[in-house]
Image 1 (cartoon, rainbow, N blue to C red):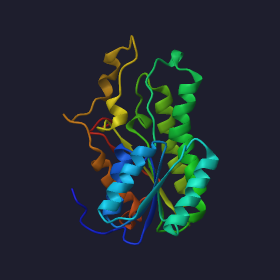
Image 2: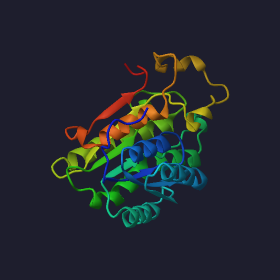
Image 3: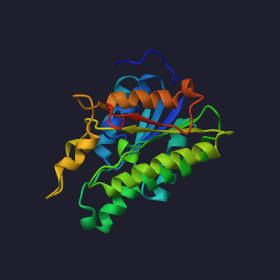
Image 4: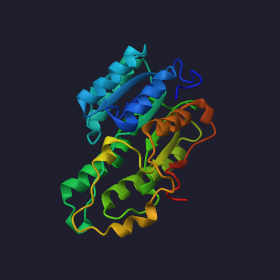
Amino acid sequence: MKPSAKRFEGRRALLTGGGSGIGRASALRLAQEGAAVYLVDVNEAGVRETVESIRSAGGKAEASVCDVRDGESCREAVDAAIRFLGGLDVLCNIAGVLHYGVSSETDDADWDRVIGVNLTGTFFMTRAALPHLRKPDCAVVNLASAAGVQAVPYAAAYCASKGGVVMLTKSLAIEHAKTGPRVNCICPGGVATPLVANFELPEGADASLFGHISSRMPTMGQPEEIAAMVAYLASYEARFVTGSAFTIDGGQVA
């Protein structure tokens, strides 16, 4: 679906996770609505492909490789975005990883990777960008998960990271309520992305434990549907919205 208005004409956005899935769909949506965008991802080929798609449609875009787990890498990415864009109005923290495993068998590296990308990376990137976003019309949009508000078995690290994103969002929103930026997060359920396509239960898992988290709808969500909410929350149409966590999950947590 094409956007109905140029809500982001003259606006500048930095997005993480722009190489695929929801990050790519969100970058394309903001660019279609007039935003100049700067994208980061560890997947250089993927993020360059997104940039070329935006440019071929007449948009302004650039990208660089960034590991959001590293604070210095985040600062460098923000500095590069400011140089390219001339300023910053919107930050979208969409980079994420997923890990399923029996908790007692989850090793330190898997725990650190999931917490590092999903939660610490969201904080590091926001921390680096905040000095450039302290205006009421600026916005931060974080990607949490339905797993951040409802438990999922065999996903302790992922649930902990996404629950942390929800509370990080609320804390930042209160802290900056008088000055900006607005800070909100989205909690998707199952969305058809490469992240979910690689899902498989750990060996010996009890599939019946997943019964309470099934979508009430017969199909999975699409990245473009989440991107539409990203665009709304990043726009000034959502000027009275901050500190909120929006579920888009086919009724999963209803």
